[in-house]
Amino acid sequence: MALRERERHVVARVEEVQPGKPLVRQVKGRQIGIFNVDGEFYALHNRCPHQGAELCRGRITHLVQAKLAGEIETSRHGEILKCPWHGWEFDIRTGQSWCDPGSMYVRQFGVKVEPGATLVKGPYVAETFPVTVEENYIVVEM
Image 1 (tube, rainbow, N blue to C red):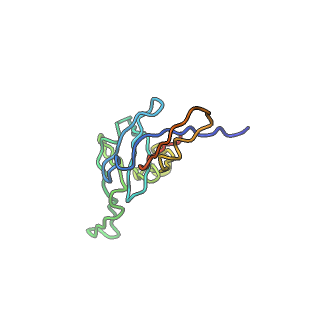
Image 2: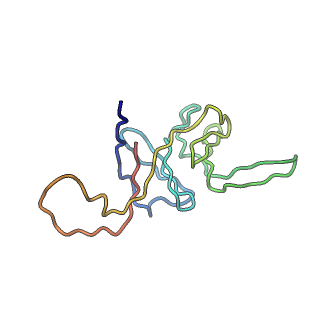
Image 3: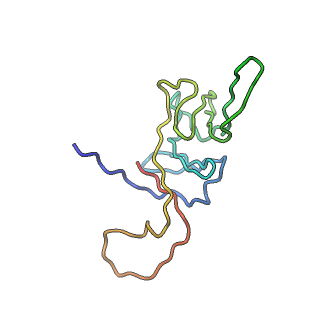
């Protein structure tokens, strides 16, 4: 059985997705949170797998670890999303849970940044007019 090709959905311009603040878009009936982490873009389902909270209403934070009691270190700033209801933490880059990494994760969607000019192309034949596109757009694959 052949794998079906993923559908592509243009969801935003690159400039619309600011670091530290998710941009939520509706795609095929699902709310998807788009994230900018150090210039790389990620998309997660806006639903906490624990009890269904709107995950993107949570705080974007960092990872806190302690090798010894009282010696706290922070890392991965801007890469952890904390659920607004119960504080469960998820890795924005992978969707993996830090509370239950073996079985709990948020659905992640593939993201590509493509020049607007490539999105204009298609298999259709029609009367054409000169058009230039100078901005980049974010495309989510589902």
